[in-house]
Length: 440
Image 1: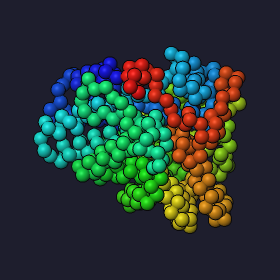
Image 2: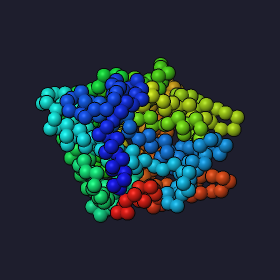
Image 3: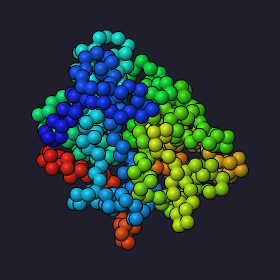
Image 4: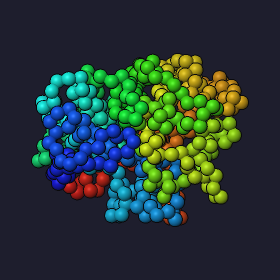
């Protein structure tokens, strides 16, 4: 780990100019020792810009994608689709590890050093708030990649990921428990809440955290932890501020566009072009989940090819998406259902679906929903999440927390199976990370 942290430290302490896209409004130039709010805003911008693009890789583990074995990236990613997390060959793409800890190192610099050197002001408070929020989100992503699904009965002993909160290049990090990581996430969020100044970020810099996106993060965390009262509370707080939905009957603006009325935080390229264009196409199970005639999402997400459906749901800079309002409706609906408020749960989800289906299709869905019991409607929520958030990075984590179903992939003419409740629903630490730190 020392080699990794030394590399990160050198990068963070002497950051150079970065290739910023339209979301990044500052382009640091040269090398600086950060001292004031302008300097630390540049450090934070660098941290945002380096947030790992990992959700496309996770999608390869799901029932969303099939591999194109003639594609240029096949050799580098085939073992990801085989759930081969140990003993993979040197060409295989690894799930990010150093990338996350690099971002965290930048953030630690802001929190530990910037808090001392920046002059007190609302701008300082906002920068520190965003730093705490981004660190919380980083550890939340890390623990859901490399830790077991949260279980309150076992979280205090389940192996998590290392917590690095200081700027110490000599530190030898050891894994914390799942509970300890979640406790740190909640601690960072609490600090961010006390400092956050911006209710919502203006369009164009809405990759930055704000009060409303922090609440959205809390809603998702509560969902993953199965804390239904908090999931309901936080999702309702978000929707009280921002509740717009993109009506696909009247607009072709995709709901995950950064300028959509649904956008809450536009940080990540959820479906990266390297996977979209050079590696995969829609799995038959994903395509069969849609009503191709009445579901307006289908034409926005997929395009018919001679022997398959290609995914045209975009993942470039204009379609960065981390949180959007439709997710908050889904979380609210599921929380209401778990709290035995079935009729309210149905009413909440139907608000989204009215904007996703043709009028005739919506009437059919509405009639079907009316007769559903609790079990049926829970399955329906998961099916609609499958459709709504296709290749946005939700599916793997929904499978982990919901049913850890059996999945089969065909790679190189052979069948590979992820069994129900398979241990590989928790991704192993990357080989390179374990090589650099034997304590992992």
